[in-house]
Length: 146
Image (cartoon, rainbow, N blue to C red; front, side, top):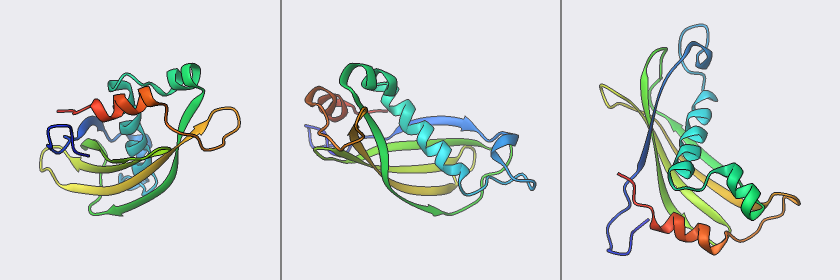
């Protein structure tokens, strides 16, 4: 996403560590485990933008749900690795947001996984798609994380 000055938006970065519970018997993160890291990074991105998910449900009656996801696995994450998960808005649509996300290992900066994720805005009661409220869209457009 490009901000009003024409500069590319910087990615939000969330750091975590790989714990025993994240790995298989060999100490390697199972492929589905990366989805948790991606989800947590998006949740923290929302919190940093002052739009926590429960607050959205309470104040606007909406929630965001994953609609589409594509992921490429480049290298394995292992027990005790420290990871950075980035979140960058690629496109804000009327009822959805496209994100680009990357998980890298702290230390050697190796790219472990790359994902594109589309989240849809839905009514929390009916689960029907709905437009992203204008004030929430403005918060999303106005964030340029460092």
